[in-house]
Image (cartoon, rainbow, N blue to C red; front, side, top):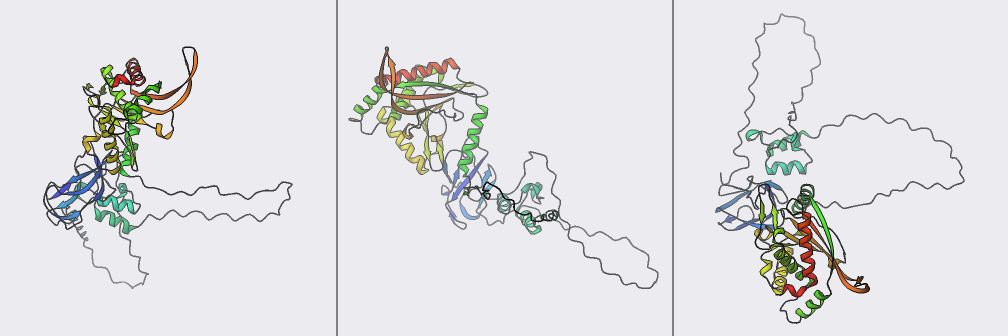
Length: 432
């Protein structure tokens, strides 16, 4: 059977969503041709055909979540859907028992009994949490018609729910609701009572809204962040960093740099330098072992129209500030265009998210699993501080470290944040 199954696009993925098909049924496919775009937890990636032939049938529909290993299309042979399903065997007629010849008696005409309706298959009994096997098109049809697949009896292989089962359920129609009792007669109108106060008629304060269906990426982001917050023991450390020297150094560097360097680029470099100072913090927790990384690979949060992406910038400790600026800009542009590769979204032990450009002064971020920490960076602004007993005005920037307590203890996290603060307040140390 020349079926193409949903691949394991990302390591450990159990399903993916078809974003769109790039070819139509009937097209000739060569090995390596991109036939569709698959939406993963973090990005949209292209899927290239691994077999050649004619695309005879598209099974998976755009926007549909399909388990890894389930068919998404058929290439090479015109096979009708569910061809492998055994045909339903007709029920054998029930043999009637022989009866004795009736004794002649007067014929009494009686009204004909109504023909009984065809029996409707009873909903299957299912155990809570039981996986329901249904073809993608069957799930799609059931969803479009407001039918719960759990109430449908499957006639496909091993009880799998297929198209004809949903069509039968649609033809059977919804179960008629129980008749509701007639409303009680309205009480007789009472004479209006005078009142010294003016009574206002009840107002309808309900708001109108538009329901926007969740994209596969939005649902994946929600699932991953919920998993992170509920399974990773977060704890938070805060620091206020004086960035007068950093701002002044950035101004001078931009006079000679081939690309514009941002404050965020310098923060990324300071993060890498802090991990060089405290390499024990560059770790990731797993159930079997602690993974200690030799290079500093940092995820950079990028806001896109479809959600937040976190492409990974690798080997930051070896990069110059101008190189970091160019690489971050490239990752951000390709994130918004949906052109990231899957390997650019995997790995890393740490992340940075910066809302300073929106004027946010301080916030705490959720760790991106399986990483062990994320630094939330706020806006730099002038504040009055006390220095050597005297009040002065300085540019201050607040940062919040969210750390995984399984991998990084409180003292170790405090040591790392101290190293980061030193680097950011003494930016020349990042250039040597």
